[in-house]
Amino acid sequence: RGSNVSLTLDMSSLGNVEPFVAIPTPREKVAMEYLQSASRILTRSQLRDVVASSHLLQSEFMEIPMNFVDPKEIDIPRHGTKNRYKTILPNPHSRVCLRPKNVTDSLSTYINANYIRGYSGKEKAFIATQGPMINTVNDFWQMVWQEDSPVIVMITKLKEKNEKCVLYWPEKRGIYGKVEVLVISVNECENYTIRNLVLKQGSHTQLVKHYWYTSWPDHKTPDSAQPLLQLMLDVEEDRLTSEGRGPVVVHCSAGIGRTGCFIATSIGCQQLKEEGVVDALNIVCQLRVDRGGMVQTSEQYEFLHHALCLYESRLSAETVQ
Image (cartoon, rainbow, N blue to C red; front, side):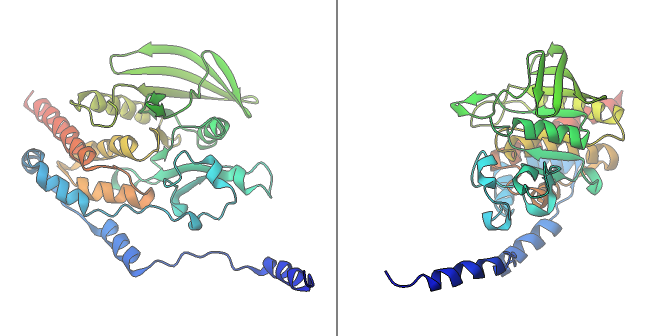
């Protein structure tokens, strides 16, 4: 059995373990350089042309690095218990940190969510996050409260074969940690349901609008971009009327695919409106710097271009009038 002296020595040296510092590999450096520089500005007529070229969009999409996170980069013990999918993690530099419950509890600061830049690099325009899990619902509401978010956009059913998201809001009233949530009204539209919520904590209140978009089909993209475009325009109107408040929270199940499509569409439409051109490649790259894997598939990348093209035709029609 031998002496346990060596055991004592080993244990005492654990206090001096160097923290893990991620040094990018040459490949990661090249990937980051691509994400920060790739660009293909499309005029309105070029946008209409490129939508017809599925092959071109697919090959362009395949070039974009995913920028997923190595779990070792997140220095929070047991953070895995709060991730819906073990490979989809928040990129550390843009991660949303919750206010800790106490100084030593680093896990209470963790939520699988990232701040996302908006049009022309506007900081914290959005938060992209995963669909809440049974053990992260309180964290979710804490985040919405802490960030003073005026709008939540949910782009998933609760179940699509497997569980995609838990029911995290009440029918009328619920208490989640320190946040009380009251449902004031429910409005059923054709493709989404709008709930007007009041959040309370102590003597303070916040108004939040919750959009639940349910018409995205399982494992593919919608046949028409019209409903998503309408949702985006409604959310944009809310965002403008709540100037000075925090980021719009967007989630699907993993918080990268449909979430990425919605945010990219929103940014691209703003660019079309302001500049008369759009750079979807650059937009998706910017999103992936902030959260890896945003706009997850080539079909979603194509769908993004269809949505932008539809918006462009609306703008053209308005100009004619």
